[in-house]
Image 1 (cartoon, one colour):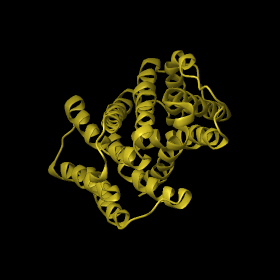
Image 2 (image 1 turned 45 degrees about the vertical axis):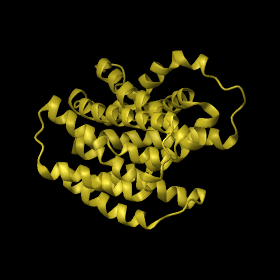
Image 3 (image 1 turned 180 degrees about the vertical axis):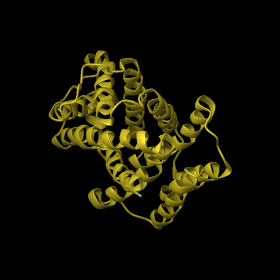
Length: 282
């Protein structure tokens, strides 16, 4: 039960992230936005490491942390940011909900995890529930929308790989160490691109506040929960956060931005909760 409570909290935080990215990306651009997001997250977490007196220098698994930082933060964050330039944040969140499908495929193909009919049904039910939230059929197909969809799917595939990889390659690392250094290496990977993507004008206050919230709350603190869940409950269980986060995106959008809530929210929530149980059935 405790794992489900952590999962709900993580979903609520990441539901906010789609809103914040939608607000900030027009002013900062995808690459600078994610450079700041990951750097702020790392700067938030390093003092916590120091306060807890962790040994932050000896025995760090540098290669796995680099790989996790790139595939679990740098690449998917940038892809989602690109997507939110062309489609609503809720749609980007919907497409990100394919992560458990990719996570299952990676677990089966690379790590020989057994998959049963309940797992497959859970993925399909979750995607159906997410679709009920937004009605994807209303999207007008344009080259920009197709690009956004492709970027969102690349992000989902990257998350699916990274979750499985981190569980196996970083199983001895503390969640706080994994969270901190993966964000630091993600920021380091994007740093060479920053001089080429600086904005022409000073970003407005709301965009700057969104970046700060993304870094501290939706990334730094959220990834502590994320890696804790991966280590204790598994990558596939943790990947179901992408089913719940879109629902929270709709909820926060309605409460904070005046976006309309629909009957699909209630229906979608029921289907999503059921899918979380099925996809983790053994």
